Amino acid sequence: MEFFLIAFLVFLATTVQTSIGFGSAILFIPIATLFIGVSSSAAIMFVVVPLTATIMYPLASERTPIKDSLLPAVISLVTFPFGLLILINTDESFLRLCVGIVVLIAVIISYSSKGMQQTNNDPELLRIILAGSLSGLMRGALGMGGAPAVLYFNWLGGTANQYRSRLYGFTMTSGAIGPIIAALGGIYNENNTFALVVLALPMTIIGIMTGKYVSTRLNRKTVQKSSATLLLMMSLIAIYTATSSLI
Image 1 (cartoon, one colour):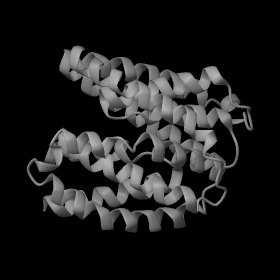
Image 2: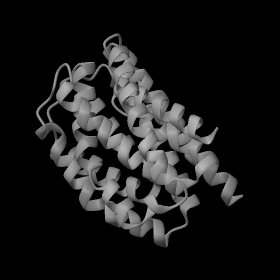
Image 3: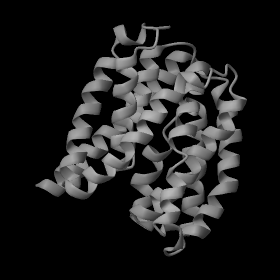
Image 4: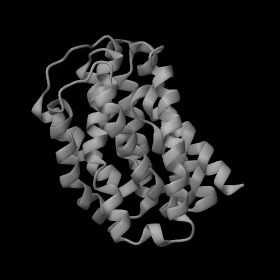
């Protein structure tokens, strides 16, 4: 039963990521951890998320130059180890609460009616550094670092296909280090983790095929609303789990 559940969750998460550009970890980890634990859930996403982005980036309908995504991704790789240090030295519940509140506020501001009308903005170095830095820190400290990149690429603007392409490029680059860290940490040797990762691979391909079909039927506004919904889910989950532990 466990294998079937994980297979279905991988399929669902990959379909969502392919459809709107991100969201695998937000959907997968909160449910999967109830059955296989945090480390195994993260190890699966370390493989599935960048693999999906790597496959989808060259297949994107309006593929954006990799330079649009490269700088924030590289910056996130630089700050990722500092996120791990924060995780080791700071109470995780307090971190989740802070991140949940910040993301919630950012989503409300970014996805207001005024924000959704902003399109085709020129890249700004300060925003790039901020998005990349926060993404790396959040990914290292909490395992979910997509929110800052999503908000940045939403602000940057463009069509729904360009938005997805930039997120694919970002995830493909910033996520490359995840499987390496998991392997060095011996996570894939724990329990049935390696078998679950192997199981996830064909489900990832099926999810990509399904998500690619769905993505052609989504316009920019729908993608933005879907992104906002997932970010809201992430922030509320973070706030709820944090307050449950702190109280």
